[in-house]
Amino acid sequence: MNRDALVFTGLIVREGDGFYSLCPELAVASQGKTETEAKNMLREAVAGYLESCFESNLPYLRPVPESEDPRRTDAQNVVSVFRLRVDLAVKVHA
Image (cartoon, rainbow, N blue to C red; front, side, top):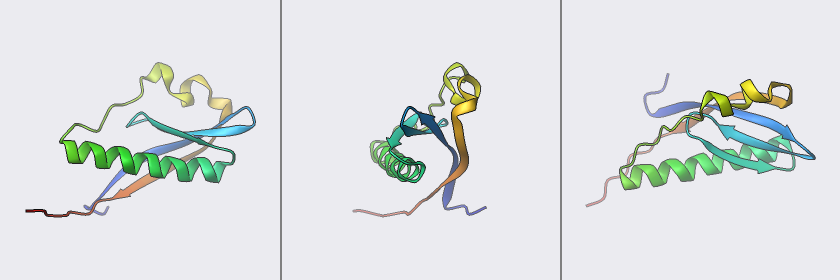
């Protein structure tokens, strides 16, 4: 595994005519009209969330409670589970 990356879980869940996406380890979610759009929007949301946490020196892990995890509560509508890999880049400012 790359030491310069974090790996999380991504979920795509069918909801009505669209999809929502969720990273359960971070409690970050997004949505889209298609599976691909929901996945891309989740990537952007996770990147923005982590960047904000790192810049503010805040903890980033905040798991979704099991009672709210769609894999447990809405498994029939989970259409995709995937690895969400976040590459880390170190920037030094003085």
